[in-house]
Image 1 (cartoon, rainbow, N blue to C red):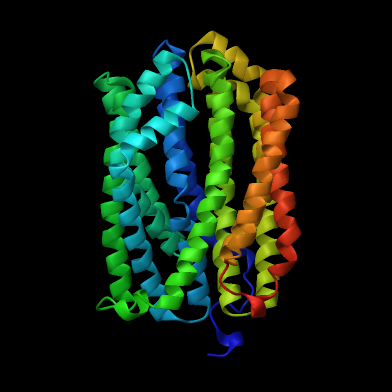
Image 2: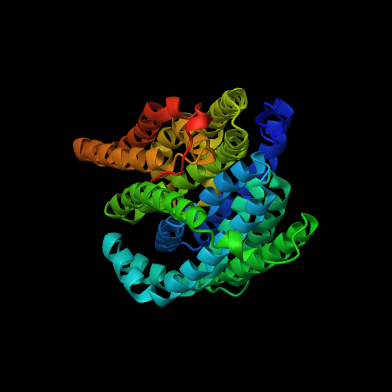
Length: 448
C-alpha cells in the first residue's frame, strides 16, 4: 500500500476532528464528575474530614493507576499508527499485548497492596481522622486494579481505531454505575467513605467485563477468528511496546507525583484548606478531561498520519486540534470565573471551606487556559510515540515545579497554586523544545 493511499494520509477535516473529540469529551466529563459526585455526596456530612479523606483516597489511586497510563496512551499511539499503515494484523495483536500487560499489572498491585498502602500514607500525611478514613477507602478500592487497567487498554485501542463512540459507551457504563452506587451506598445506606470506595470497585469491574465483550465483537467484525500469537509475541514489536510503555510510565509517575505533592502540601495546611483545594481541583479535573477530548483526537490523527508517513496530514492534525482546544479552554476558564462561587456552594456545606475555596478560585479558573497547551502537546507526542521526549520533558517539568514551590512557600496556599501553574508552563515549554521532530515521519523509530 503506497503512503498516499494509506488510511492516515488524507488531512483530517474539522468535522472529523469533532467526530473524534466530542464522544471523548462526553465520556471524559463523566469521569471527573465521579469525583465531583463523591465530593458532593460526602460533603453532605457536616465534617470536612470526609471530603479530605475521599480526596486523598482517590489521589492515591490516581497516582497508582496513572502510573499505568501507558496502557491507554501507548495502545492508542501504536494502534493508530498500525491503522494508518494499513497493518490490520498489528491492530489486532496490539490489543492482546495490552490486555496481557493489564492483567499482569493488576494482579501485581493487589499482591503488593500492603507496601503500596504504607508508602502512600507515608508520603501523604493528613490529619489522623482523614488518614483513617482514607485507609478504609484504599482497602476496598485496591481490588479494582485489574479491571481499571483492563479498561485503560480497551479505551486506548478504541481511540486508536477512531471508535471513540464505543469509548463513550464504556465510560458511561463505568461512570453512571459508579455514581448510582455511591448515592445508594452513602446517602441510602449511610456507609460513608466505605460506600464511595465500594461503589467504584463494583463499577470498574462491570465496565471492564462489558468492554471485553465489545472488543470481542469488534475483533470478529474485523476478521479475527483466532489469536495471532506469532505477531503478539514478535520480539521487535514487544521491544517497541515495552520501550513506549516504560517511557510513558515514567512520564505519568512524574506528572502524578506533582499533583500528589500539591495535595500533600495542602493537607499539611489543615482540614479546611485541604477540603477547599479538593473542591477547586475537581474543577480542574473536569476541565482537563473535557480538553483531553481534543488531545485524544490529536493522538489518533497524528498516529495515523505517522503510520501513513504524511507530513501534511500531521501538520493539519496538529493545527486544527490545537485551534479547537485553545478556544474551548478559554471558554471554560471564563465560565469558572463567572460561576465558580455557585459551584462551590453546591459542592460543600462547611462554611469555612466554602470561604477558603472562594479565596483561591481564580487559580482554578485560570488553569484550563494555562494548561491546555501541555494537554495538547501530550496528545501530539503520544500519537507520534515520541515517548522518550515526553519522559525527559516530564522529569524536567517536575524539577521546575518543585523549585517553584520552594521559592513560593512564603506565600502559603497562593504560592502552592502558583507553583502548580508553573508546572503547566514547564510542561508546555519542555515539549515545545522537541516539537520540530514530530513532522518528520520518515525518521520515526521506537523510542528508547
